[in-house]
Length: 169
Image (cartoon, rainbow, N blue to C red; front, side, top):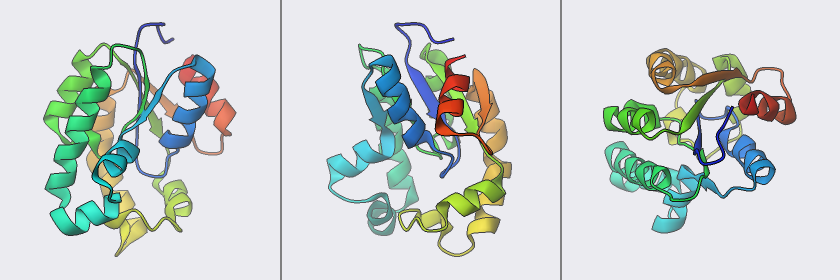
């Protein structure tokens, strides 16, 4: 259950539905939605793909950390759709755990994610081998998502409303 003064942070792999679920939760809870990828793109005037291509993954991860900290420091409770790789940074994991936010891991089978991201051209990490890359990423990140999560919501074969209800429980 989410407290009225508590941030709600959604973490999980790319394609799991964090952005969509966050929008519905924002409407339901009457809260501002803070989508870290969207904030990074809006501020820099470049897509995630362009940032990766021009500046590299470390530069993107630094921006991701900065935007996450900003969201967690918001004086009003917000719904945060965190970038999929946000858990890779130890400092980000500490920030998530120490912030008092409720962190929910939206979890999907990598095979489900492959289907969902098949047509998404904005995911540079998936350019060469989407299925293999997603499987490797899941293995690498699964313990990190577990480390920060207060709750785990399985999203496979569930509607957005079913996922939202599970997050709110």
